[in-house]
Image: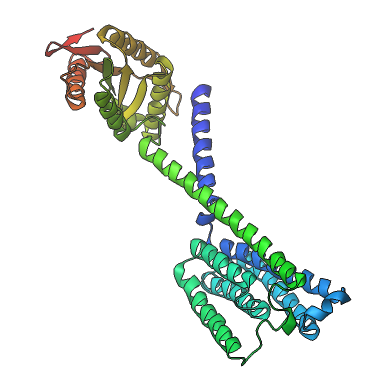
Length: 395
């Protein structure tokens, strides 16, 4: 009973771990958790602005390149935005289960982020590298993380604002990049160039990390989905689809003889009815472990449906297949399973074997193995029978 309990605990831990792993994917986060991530990134951007402006204020040699009064006033604006974004993180966490908060906070958080981006983008120049790269990178990340209606509801006004600023600057109706002095435009001075680099590099690196994280997690999820489509979730054996693919591959490769063994657990419905479906699942798991232990690494074990399993024994003739099936049958018959009230019950299985020939297709071979299995069950169960010369022969 201790062994069975340990097996059940391991299976449960694996299922829980897999569930938690999937839940930790960034794309699977709740929308408010994603808002917290964007607010943290927005706070970090404003912190960069605060550091940049503070550095200017304490470095008189740089005053010639900037509008000093605007730098001073905008430093306070950045501090306010920084405080607002930090302050919004707590409601996103504390009120995450409140329906109204779930509806309103994403718009408020992303809106605040976009407004601050547009404002600072205008200050350094709508067409500056820092503004363009920030706009493209952050909007792209937003489209990956958030519903389109939220992103586009903020993207469209932001695009209109930046376009209008660009047009008005072109018409000299408003100053272009007002935080810089007019003679500081362009690449003719190192201060402007290094300022652009200062803002671009953190944003690019952050977005690259986010993109790489999302891409890696997407690939992981694709592999997991692919694995789930090929593996039976209860027994962790290949499912029927995978077995059929394997048989088709063997048929195309014209490989050496292989044997198919179909086995069906005897009176399995009685186990489910008398001891419960959870005990039935436990029996299936124990039998799958036995089959894996009794066969070679090159052999393939699959769950063919319900209480039926299939073995694909590569490079095996009839005698070798019979020997392997008998070994599995005896191991299953020696299995001891206890009910919840401590009652011991045993499990047996019937086996049907068919060996490939050049003229037989996989589905025909499966039919022969199934006929041999039917004969084994009809003759009293807990037996191995092989299909040879158009008839099932008892072993």
